[in-house]
Amino acid sequence: MHLILFFIFAGFCLAGAINLLLQSHPINSALSLIVVMTSLAVLYLLLGAEFLAAAQVIVYAGAIMVLFIFVVMLLNAGREDRTLGSRVARVLGLPAVVALLAVLATLILHTQGLGTTAISQGLTTTEELSRVLFHELLLPFEVTSVLILIAILGAVALARKGDGTGRSVERTATK
Image 1 (tube, one colour):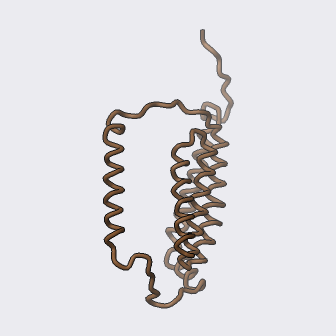
Image 2: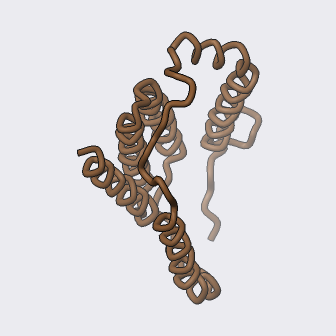
Image 3: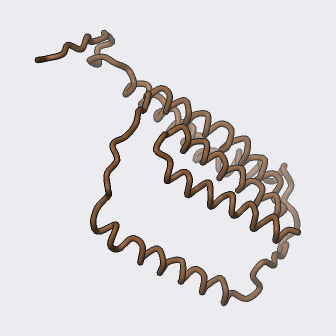
């Protein structure tokens, strides 16, 4: 049953990632990314990492995606111009992807003990996990928070219409 669920949600994850790349509207891409994040949370549940699955849904599928959608709406991103891409990417891209998938398939098929897990040092409690997060990893956690705040402020500054002095600039059409 676990194997069937794994393949179903791995398929959802891959389909969401491919849809993310193929969408032309940024909101649809963000919604596809939510499908990917939720599918990953289910895969974490299948591995027995309940806390990590809950954190995946709360932090990534919840907070970060709301932030992405907020920034996209704030920037009022319209439709982008479509290009055919570079000639090099078209000529070398498909063979490179096929070669990469062939190498990955070979590695997966020749790996011994695929799909087996073992608990080496017992279960980790939430108390131990929180001690690591908020004692040993407190500085990276706070630096990440500051970087996200700077990104939000940058998005707001880019979205503002004006000349940088706080005054709104009237745009005049030249003939």
